[in-house]
Each structure stands twice: as structure tokens, then as C-alpha cells.
Length: 140
Image 1 (tube, rainbow, N blue to C red):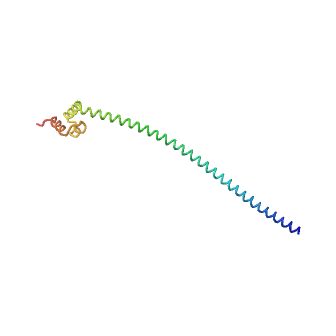
Image 2: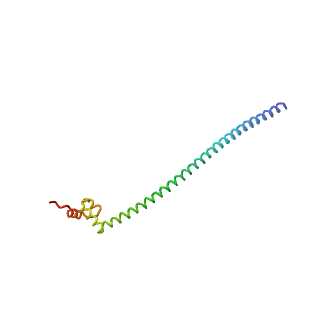
């Protein structure tokens, strides 16, 4: 009976050895998988960090570009304001007697049309017609 008992204990020991070998193999495979996953995750993290750096660079460039646009818009607004100021001054000057004198001078020289007198000097159409009729060369 002692032989059977020894064979039984050996069988049990062999069974535990096989179970241990299978467990260690699975654990090694699991560690290898986790290690592989960790390397993959590390590579993905590095790729994301590189992309983040590229995006930050692009955003900085875009910011500089937008600053340039802001400066150009400010300059254009200043130029427009200057032109509007000059236009208002010119319109006010045209409304004055001096502007009318200029219209009379051009009409006597025959260098202005009815539409120009209306549009450029602010005369009514009847005023412009009268001014042109008065200053027409006399037909014989």
C-alpha cells in the first residue's frame, strides 16, 4: 500500500507541478501582453505629445497672423476715417460760396455737365440748368 500511496503523492505533486507550469506560462504571457500594451500606449502617448506640439505651433502662427490682420484692419479704419473727414470737408466747401464760384467758373469755360453740377457741387437740377443756360456761348 505504501507504493500506491507514494504513486498517489507523486501524481498529486505532478498535477500541482503541471498546474504551476500552466499558471506561470499564463502569467508570463499576461506580463508580455501587458508589457506590449504598455509599449503601445507609450508610443501613442509620444505621438499625441508630438501632435500637441504641432498644434500649439500652428496656433501660435495663427495668432501672429490674426495680429497682422488686426493691425491691417486698424490701419484701414484710420484711412477710411481720414477719407470720410476729407469728404465731409470737401462737401462743406462745395456748399460754401467758394464751391459755387468754382461751379460758375467751370460752367463759363464749358468744362462741366449738368450731372456734374448736380452730383459734384450739390446744386439742384434747375439751378444747374440755369447756370449752364446763363453761361452758354451766344449763338449769332
